[in-house]
Amino acid sequence: MLNVSVQAQGQPVVLLPASGLVAKDLAIIVNRQDPLSVKIASYYQQKRKIPKENIITISFKTGQSVMHPGEFAVLQKTVESKTPKHIQAYLLTWADPYRVGCMSISSAFALGFDKQYCAEGCKLTAQSRYAGSTSLKPYDDLGIRPTMLLAATSFAQAKALIDRGIAADGQAVLEDHEAFAYLVETSDKNRSVRKKVFPFVEALLAEQISINSIKTDAIKNKTQIMFYFTGKKFIDSIKSNQFLPGAMADHLTSTGGKLTNSAQMSALRWLEGGATGSYGTVVEPCNFLEKFPNPLVAMIHYLQGASLIEAYWKSVVMPGQGVFIGEPLAKPYAGYQLKAKEKGYALYSPVLTHGYYKISTSSQEAGPFTLVTSGVEITPYSKLITLPLPLAAFYKIERLEGFTQSIF
Image (cartoon, rainbow, N blue to C red; front, side, top):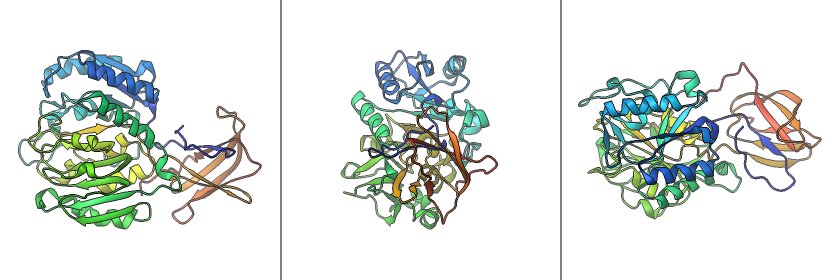
């Protein structure tokens, strides 16, 4: 079950259908030779309540940005031998190394080191089967464990990032919440190729979030930012803006994924500036759209309650050369609103997408639950569910089998 929004005293608690990965699905990979990695892993496990059996300890020398594929192969075998079968995703608690040979380290752990995901020069690579998927269990369904780096160069930065991710959960659905998306076309034409996608984002998502598609080299002094997609070697004024907990932000450029030694702006600057997740490429990708996050796909999944790691990974068709960084379990849209009505409560949640649902009630969260109604339909024109009286302490909403979810 997902974490639910904190409700006013006296209101029932709603248990929503799963919309994304949760703590038990994630394994933390920690380097015992790196004190910062150990400290980050410990804090994250505590704050996210990650089961102890999900902590995987490995050992390798620090101070390297690029790991040799042979060294990685040994480490990967160790990780695989220690990974519980139910694990669906990995979190790495370091910024270096960010690369394995010609691949990013996040893609190497997720897909296995394989040169079909690499390219010398301006060439396409193998695609990820996870891209665009509606799967909620990527390893069970596809044999892929999406991987993200909880990357930071100090514990203070890592702690702030973790705390932002946790603060994000369910908050974007609260009634007084306002969020903005900035889709920016800069003066750098080669790095602004994602502008082709911007009109589709506006057409499909304008009812769900305030979208600003603009031409500028950098936005300044903006508030309540949830999405910021742009393209340029360096982005100015990041810290002048105020990002909401859970925010995604990235810039399309060649080496933003060289986290600690890039000649261009590192994707780490987004996290240091207040974003919760980002992405960058670790070797020259050329400006193929498929090698960078698709704002439309990332936003659709995120706005329907997916976790940060899922929404970002699903938005990149060719992720072999790109590294994903941030707090993976942030889910700002996996919450709900309740409004009292004469005949019960009206429930709204982005998690409840088009389809049919059943409602059960109980006096306690662990159940047992009693079915009270079934066949309740959610459509683009009818997005509310009425929770029937008599009032119960807990309501469980479940999607009826046979009705598959669409990201649209």
